[in-house]
Length: 78
Image (cartoon, rainbow, N blue to C red; front, top):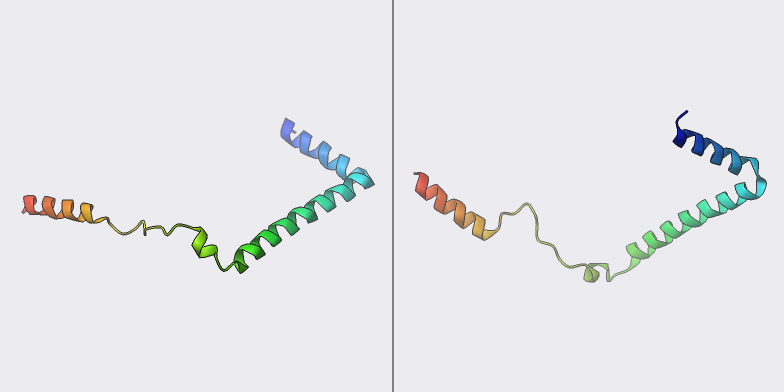
């Protein structure tokens, strides 16, 4: 096994082998999940979410100066 695999294996053995460490790990994982769900829920329910972000221009629309430049170049090639 390479060093990373050895470290993961020994950490897993330490967590699964100790009841307090196992309980702490489960509580930590549950707390992280609850935090993500709460944040997602609050973001989804906030009516002012659209006001918090600046409106972005569509990146796939060509800016007018490029269209003008393309028109000029097109005129030179014909």
